Length: 530
Image 1 (cartoon, rainbow, N blue to C red):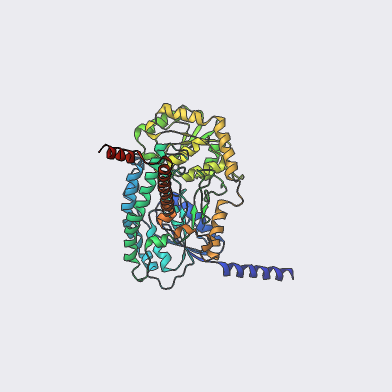
Image 2: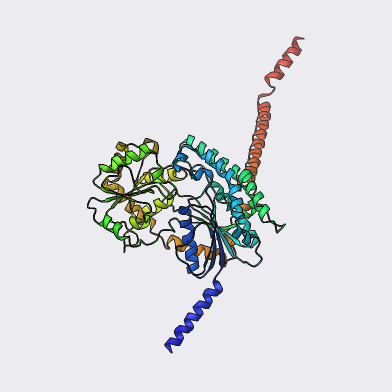
């Protein structure tokens, strides 16, 4: 009897799961592994929950996952990101933005021309309840949302930008919210606030009047089987949910509308068992281990010779061991205390098994480029940072780590053996580790894990057909209404009229009390003389 009851309950649960499961299309075309790590965490979780998930991406999962269909689309990075990325440190925010806007249409073409994507574009049989896309320089893929009449969920791989907030009617005060690509804090000087404002206006203007129209032209060219496709700007503003890979404890607090959700660190999982050689290397390090990685896009082996030599010389003088992500077979002048790896399981090195969110006791410091994922993994495990930012939001990330007292910043162009030694010795001081562990406790003090939150809100907007009740009325206002310029104009006019009336009344009273004005007296005096 108990067995039959168990089977009945299992069938009911299965039927409920099936009835509530959704068909979800994920489009993540940017060929950057660090980006894909974030998105694949969510799509795997949604598939695990019983949803039918189809993903268009340059990357495939290592092992087949039930309910997850993968369409591999191999694409190349844009010119700026295809060479030695250390050279990007010489390019400013404005130059990188222009390059991004210029390359976006060509990137859209390369996506839509792919044979398997073409099959989807002209499909008459597919149905999707929601489309999940990365929100950066590929808004053209939202043409799929219109084709399949699917609600839109966007994921930002970092903390978001001012123009992304515009899509959901979110307030973006330039006074204390620094642009993601500026090296500013939330407490800006007048000059910094001026630059922050001009940069924000520049990004918004470029997006609205240059990048989006050019991408829309490509979208219309390929989604040409329908005549009723709306402007791309309108499609973007129909976003139901924006997931931000951010958390207020790791970045600067900001106001968010209900359908902008922070899920920073949703890619971080419980540490897995390390390969035996790495486990032994960490365990047999009485003076500790320093982990050094510049991320998945920046290749350590491509750094200038002078910088490489500075690190080698500095590391040779340390009593700690160094585990260095290095992409070639050998390192010229490799010290005895340095172990190389072309690929290293970063999150597992920083974490300790079986403790889900604690650093291996021998991992003393993480030398990093300041990428957001690396920063989140370090904070999750409570490991202090030595940040060497090169481009993008890395400057902002490292500045925040420095201001919170768990990181030291080293300028790439100022790297010498002496500066590296100074930075390492400073970051190894106990207070940096104490601050990292304190912040780790703050970050992990959440009712749900970031991945659980991302999955919950994704299912929430699907259940509630896009959740229009979370939509901000700011999206329905004109620009002058949003900034209250019409109200300010009316108030200014009212004040002007009041002042004018006050002036006229005062003048009349003055005449009444004082009799003739001096001008009138002079006129009468001249009349008497005549």
